[in-house]
Image 1: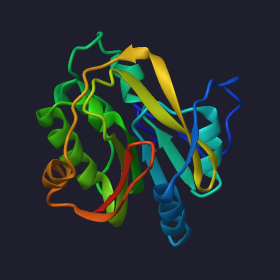
Image 2: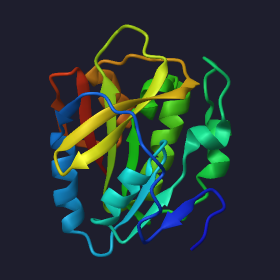
Image 3: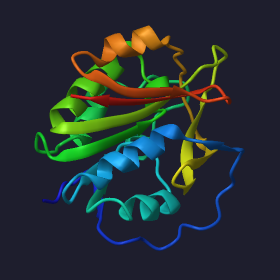
Amino acid sequence: MNYRSSVIYSAPPKPLGPEVAGGIYKSRMIEKYLGFLAKCVKPRILDISPITGRNISFFLEYTHTLYVCDMLRRINPRPLISITMEQMMPFLDYEPGIFDGIHLWDLPDHLDNKALTGLLKKCATLLTPTGLIMMIASNSEKPQHQFQYLLIEKEDAVTLKKVMTYELPYYHRANRDIHLMMEPMMQHSSFICLNGIREFLFKR
């Protein structure tokens, strides 16, 4: 399968160069998620957020095929202008039920309720019956306009890195609101880290 919206990896890519990183924290979500992937047969992963060569190489150790659909790069949003579901849909042209894991990272923090609800419903259709959605959310009520994503250091250590290219709207949500928006999906596990990051795994 080849999709016009994806770069598909089954072998590590060439390094993308040095990356500027922030503080390292322990991610229990990654640890749980890797345990889940180990039980899958030839797992397929879709990553919708900005991703680095380091993360691609890391996840290729645990998956059969990694599809990268860098939504922000494809849409190239204007500063502080909300991304719509209509903008995202053309890049989600995948067959239903083919992914064991979908990575959103903190993209949901920068989508309004309508766009996020539409994205989550679409992602649910793309998962296998046992598949998981992986996402994080900031616990800060202060505006966090610069997109940040996670650089994987090892199985349970993660570095946050801000992406200076994108300045996006920020929507803080309580855990209850996140769970309501994920329906009919159910929470698999969630964790609150000391740095204020909330980690979630959701299942069908």
